[in-house]
Length: 122
Image 1 (cartoon, one colour):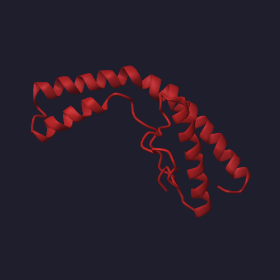
Image 2 (cartoon, one colour):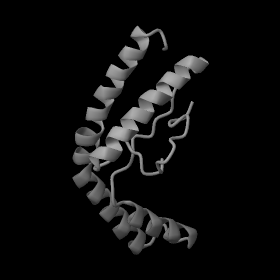
Image 3 (cartoon, rainbow, N blue to C red):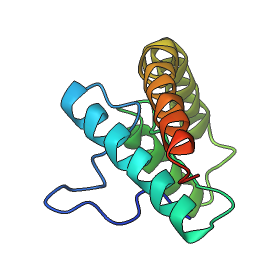
């Protein structure tokens, strides 16, 4: 089963990320993830696919790289420079997003799973 299921109502699920810097969106993502795990348990699903999020502000670099790729410029200096900038930005931000924003929600999800197990749902 793919997170989020069922699809959240009145919320743009494209903005729900477990690694979101927006605490309210992160809390909603945790809530809907636990709900997905519960639904998966009720339906007998063997796994739930999670996408915790992405390191912010990389889309701009990714879009430029994709354009250069489509133009056949993967070996160009421009491609190498943009790729290096993307990697540097990601490396600067990864601790904030991964360790600071993903580890915390993971703990809450694990507690949610333990609760669902105690209720016999998963």
